[in-house]
Length: 250
Ligand code: ZN
Image (cartoon, rainbow, N blue to C red; front, side, top):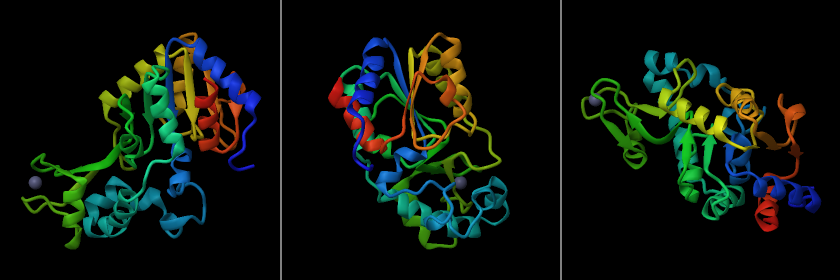
């Protein structure tokens, strides 16, 4: 199955993209799996295997014990920082370059859309690209944060622990990112949902905004989502192969 897709279905998706004046992609963990980043909801995978992310990656954990938080999260930084975008990320860049894609809204914090070269990008859960000091507001780039991982935790020049600029469990989302994502979804003729189970807020609510605005949904995701019954098209093949077939069929 892997690497092979139904050409007729890819052509159907291409037809939807061609017919839409505005296409917006919404991506989740599934698009990064071919880059070697496990979806943490999948049991028994990688660094999340023996921890509960809801506990360790919680703002409470960062506040209570930054050293323990960074012992775990620092490993994640090192792993994610080395990952490269895959053919699915590249396919979205190709669509954008051809004027077929307005923007990518992503739940992922792994920077892979940035590395691939997507320009219209909304990272609704933030990204590991920077970390900040909540005391004095100074922001540090990833390279700088990695250099500071040697101590008990990466610290600001003021001595306080840095917090990654990702939305931790228990934290509020960035309102400007949410507003932009909602605006894009509401204005889309086609919301192309990729590699997301569409469960987690806010992305779980974005398909409704597209439908309310008269747009359509296409879903490229393995496994069921709560929006499958409202989608014009659902593709379940390998995410890289499906998106490369879409680009080829346009
Ligand atoms: Zn500081």
